[in-house]
Length: 59
Length: 359
Image (tube, rainbow over all chains, first blue to last red; front, side):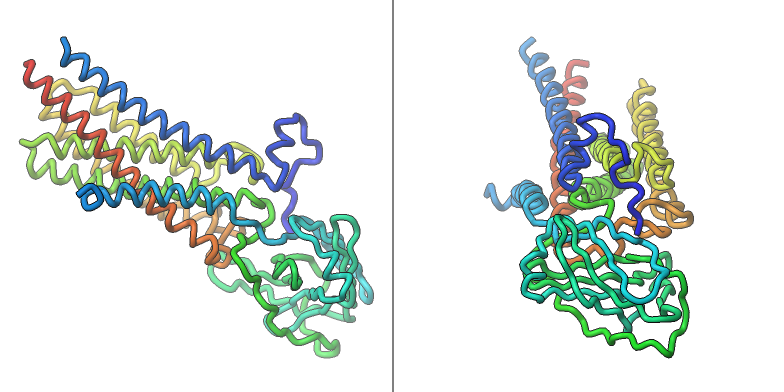
């Protein structure tokens, strides 16, 4: 069985240990966070472009 | 009226919402993280110690209802004689017969590893658990003297549970967030290439050009999310952010090709030229995606599923409970991408019309 890639013998920092804890569930949390950041980034980019157009309208 | 026109948008958000909830709340089946000893050379009584995850075998061991066996091939197995619970570990007692072990090591399909020796555990309370290639025997081959027990199928687990796979563990849930990004990217870029073809046929309308640009932008965004989430996932399963795995490399190249598309667009003053040349580039860019993402990765060994002998999912592991969340996730994110790309195209078109009016 291939387990050599599971938590390295000496897991250094506390944050590293957290990522391996509870069956690596925090990796999933991190992935969802990246996904949400990307979606919000795009929505806000579009909003700022619309805002620019609105400002041009007013001028 | 609202529902008639926009039903697919409601569907998209509902599906994404569903995958978040079902993907995170469906429990993991009982699993085995480690087996020791991994190598069996002695004969007679052997004790196997199993580190278990998310399982409590104590009640079953107490009333003798736990069943376990090491399957050597389709029909023969070594039945466990006894079991006990030691803290979080389960200890199984096997009587290994003399001589060779008739382990079936032939691949069931191209690029698939044999699952044998397959450790199987059947428990009334914890359900069915199996570990592929669970142990290594010193001698493999025909054995006509020893009596192996015949395999009767164990009952499969009831209820919805995700399979526990070693190394992946709970991060198997990333299947619903990482993989749909690539499916979504592929579809959005296909739509973008189709709009590019339409633009070349009717260059006088810039609608097609703007649409093709918007779909490429959202496709690229999906690809970037895919590569970032993949890197994070890889860090804690394959051991490194970037393993120079063939699929990682080819998808990075694909993203660079599409980034170059936006650089190209930005470098034209003349609108007609910009539209036509970037449409041609876009069609070529899409046609490189097929060999980059679907052909080259299949030709070499890779850490990604479906290639080489890797520990991640294969068609065997992608079970129905995973599919029940995975397919809705793909549909949800594709529809969401189409929605956002359309809004983006409308904003760009509005800006273009305004610029025209102002001269």
